[in-house]
Length: 172
Figure 1 (cartoon, rainbow, N blue to C red):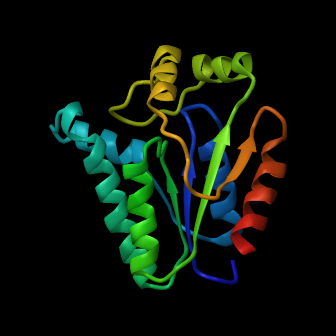
Figure 2: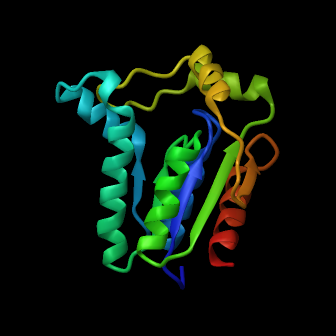
């Protein structure tokens, strides 16, 4: 990546956002900070699940800030379903005077999406796999977007094509 930036991935569990984030990270050599492992680490350290949602986002925000200070691009891998979460990334980008790219990954084919959820094994210590019912609950939490974003449908394109589009947007 020729210019420094903050890339905030968004999307429901199983949509393909982590796959895209990992592919972009490899191509542009940027660190990824993912909410799920951060939150699971808090749970295995004794924090209650009720206390870790916002805290995990705040941990990622702090890690991203440290890397942005070093001149690195950073990728955030999180559902980012609400304006409060998205606003964290807007403020961070503004504080560090870097461009912010929002990338939302969806899977418009419900059968494909559900099959992904029901078969996936991420192996994050301390975190059980998410259920389809939980994905549907998260979908109901989504607030409308107010930002320009790249919308990628993982049921329409292969991961390589999605990654290519994401990188092109980040470099634009």
